[in-house]
Length: 263
Image 1 (cartoon, rainbow, N blue to C red):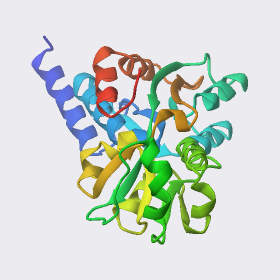
Image 2: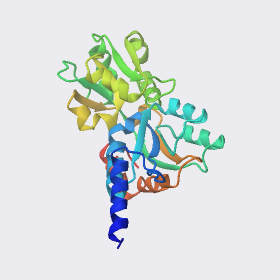
Image 3: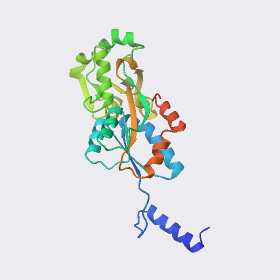
Image 4: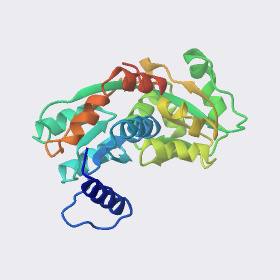
């Protein structure tokens, strides 16, 4: 038990820090800095809220396309943990000497065809129906949204699936590219695009489901697997290891599965 005077000083110091008042000699814990693929927006936010509630450790989340984030890391982005929608980008950072190891697989993503709320379009029930009728269904639309295949893994998977369905060329003039999968999804939910391809993890998020119509889960055989990997950076602060380990626990994996990430 602290002496009354010491305890009072500690409480006053914490209160001053919480109010944003600088306290000489007192350094507040630094947030764990995480850069993550946009498909993790809702799942990872929930996970980090649980982590912060349990540990008191703050987490600073930054979302974007995995390719852009990896490039920023090579350019010196100060970071503790990188969570990529494409594990090849993590391997590349390791080869470049920016990570101590190749990290850990946290799940495999899926893509889905999504429509705006109250759309008159009909989603296919299976791959056969998509191949036979989806082109006619999409013919009247003006805009079709996907993430940019140049730097977003989900955009690359979307392009591959559309090519395998014979839809890539017919949709060329209608494509609108999001900087990342989250932005592409917003194009659809806002009505700026009349259809698009999103991450299953976003389609399952209540925040997205309330603003969109139903979705069709695109068969996994139509694109390369979206193996997603996370890694600690060599510059990571010690507190980041606890979050990294938490994200590999059964509880964290169960929440990721709820958002459609398979093991």
